[in-house]
Image (cartoon, rainbow, N blue to C red; front, side, top):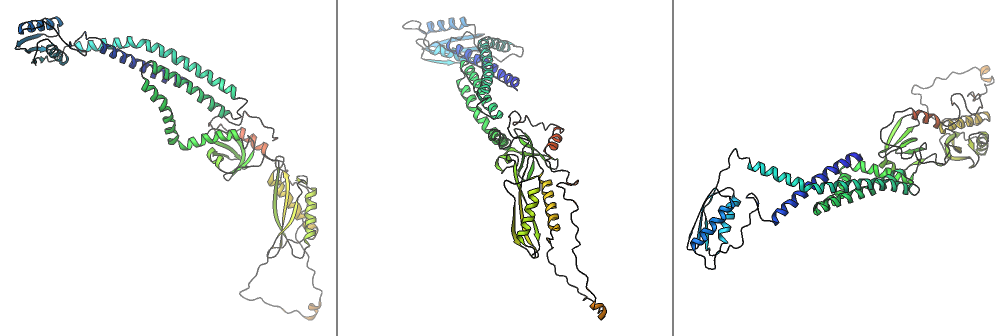
Length: 471
């Protein structure tokens, strides 16, 4: 990128030097008398002959001057009563006009009748081409000093810009945390130094207006690009703010815009997440900056809850004691903050109990811990005779229900005792084989993310920074 920029600026400087040399040459020719008929011809302001010039003296003086120039193949001068009549052939319109101005400014001339005609150009006349090549050679020679001066100034500007970029990065290393922001500051400063060098080249070349246009047009170009690439600009600016504020680090488990996953990378366009189901998601940085972010890793302790319904005939305080006893013995449930078992609502057939508990989200998986606690609470309720009935339902028999009458002997027989035949959880283990332990899956997902191909969206803006969080 630096080589391309230097090449473009070098080409622009060469064109400017050539143009300035051509301008200087044109100004130099304008300040001197013409030596060739093709240039701008300035007639004498006044040609004196004698204090009282006669017609023959005016004619003789004009003939001598026209013959001395050698610009007119044929010419004739006639003077009658101070009126000059010019006839003949002129090579160019400038030469014809020059002859008329010469006669008009001669002493004693009252009026001039310029009857000279222009010679038709010859198809084999290479004089104009030769004059053009000669003029081009002179322009090149005059432009050489500007060219070499521009090369020296531009080379010095590029070197100074590179040194300023390095010095700015080193100066901001301990003051600005964001690596992207340090790069933006450094390259902005270096660009100003490079523009200053280009401005000096243009000023030395005499193109002050063009220099001001280049300097002022830089801001306009930036504004136009910002409008044309609004989404890209928003994501880039959001990446700067995110890398400065750092609401998350690489490896943090976050939830944003409906996506939950571990942060893999923050680049200038998007934030790469590895979701809990193993998918890679790219969330635009503009969305990351404007949406609410839930960082589950920033604080190790997390609270989880679930609802369980018990029968109306069961004592609520007994239900609470049983549930608290289960969570007091669970190794993944924290006792500070303490777990809670609260009556939440009176349902149609059950009293809904809300159970809250805390656990370490960095060490344990939320899904596994939740499954384990629910399973053990259900088992404890069943072991202690706590009922968990379904909601009451009304059953309608459209064809009626047949009734069979039993004899007295059968009616007097002892009715069978109803027993709760619902199965009790056979194991009181904290984690079953199906739950596969309670540990977090962050390490597994990080190992899986390392095996994925690169996204190709640039460097990770979070990678160079260190963090004290334990993973």
